[in-house]
Each structure stands twice: as structure tokens, then as C-alpha cells.
Length: 297
Ligand code: C5P
Picture (cartoon, helix red, strand yellow):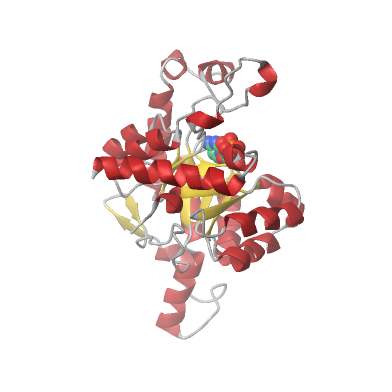
């Protein structure tokens, strides 16, 4: 059974391997997964993935938020699949085709092993074309069932998550980016539009704010993962309005609000990283999640 701590993905937003290892050692067994984002990946390269896995045994969420032409994204995803991460992100703000190609690339290893079983050859670059392996069912992409998603399970495939609308965006950012009034006045409509693209492309789920989880779940069903950043426990929100105390996240929720709405995972960075006792902060969040799940059962 999933415990409160298993819902927590800690964001390793660090610029050094040394600091990363310090936090992984502190938090292993206290959170469900570790998130490696652009800062750490650029600083340390792909080797950091193996290092975090070896130190913690936890799942890995590679949050590099790809956005490029479809063919490039597919090829990048093939390399990501070789790294055996559990979750990876692409932006939904591009084309449906890019998302489809991302999913296709992410199945590289599965397809490779299917091909190997069928032919006894271990060489995908020659022989049967792996592109033909994508299954279509009434126009929808069907992908092998994903059972990974951290929680200390063995690696079971790389799940692709579509990033809908970043949690540091509010209406003013949407307006400044040139969106129609319809979306400026209703960010949820934009989130749902993008989530639908991700769903149709065969993504495992989306990254969205806790304010949108309920709508995502009621529209696409409980198996479509909702991973939620912008988490701010009530105790972590500064009481003063002074500017230097506020951070960039706009569409925020507490851990309990996100989990009650149906979030499968919450991404937490600064509320744990900046706490005077990060382990106690992680435990407090896990307890908050356990308490709200007990109240519901
Ligand atoms: O420190 P904080 O809790 O705000 O960290 C949130 C993490 O989640 C960061 O690593 C950020 O890049 C990531 N993220 C986000 N909003 C998204 C997707 C990812 O804040 N929509």
C-alpha cells in the first residue's frame, strides 16, 4: 500500500553533486521519488541518475521538459529510456505529434526486448523497423501498461508526463504570451486542452497544479497520472507580504488539498530544502497526507 511518504517527489534542485548526495542521504526512505531537473542534469550529466538510484533505491523523475521538433524528441526519448528513469516530462504546448513521438521514443527499451524475443537478434537499428511496433486502436495510441512510478518498485518502463501549464504562470502570464481571452480568463480550460493532447498521444499522465487535479481525474479517469508541483504546506507560507519572502509559484496548494483532489504524486522542493530540518519537514508532509487519506477512508 502507498504510504504518505510515497506520494512525495523531492526536487533535487541543486548545482552540485555534493549537495545532492547530502539531501539524498538525508531523505532516502522518507520520500517516494527524487526529481532530477535541468540544473542538476546540466551540472552533473546523466551519471547523476545512476548515483541517486544507487544511493536511495528510489524512483527517478527526470524533469527536463522537452520541447523540440517531433523527430528530435523521439530520439531524445530513446536515450532517456536507456537511462531507465520512471517518469520524464515533455511540454504539451507543442504539437500532438511531438507528444506521440515522445511516447513512441519512451517505449524504445520495451520494443527492443519484444523485438529481441521475437527474433533472437539484439539489434534494432537493422532489420524490422521499430516504428511499426506502435499499436493503434480506433485511432488512439495504446501503450504497454505502466506500473513503475517510483514507490520503490523495480523499473517497469518510462512514463511520459505532459507539462500542461507551469505552476508559476497565472492569467497575466497567459495573456502576455498571446493567448485568447478564453484561456486568459480560464486557465483550467487551457490545462484540459493540453491534457487532452497528452491523453490522446498515450502519455502516462500530466504535470498540473493541485487546483486542476480534480478536473483532470474526472475527465480522463483515475489511471491517468496527475503529478502536482506548486506545493506549499500551510506552515511554509510566509506570513509577511514583503516581496523577498514570496516565491515564484502562483497556482499553489497544500499537500492535503492536492491529495484530496486525487494527485498521484506531489513535487516538493523548497518547503523541504529550505526547512531548518528537511527530514522533519518531509515527515510533516507525509503525516499530513496520511491524515487526509485516513479521514477519507
Ligand atoms: O521549490 P518548489 O517546490 O517550487 O519546486 C518545484 C519543482 O517542480 C521545481 O523543480 C520546478 O522546476 C518543478 N515544476 C514546477 N512546475 C511545473 C513543473 C515542474 O514547479 N509545472
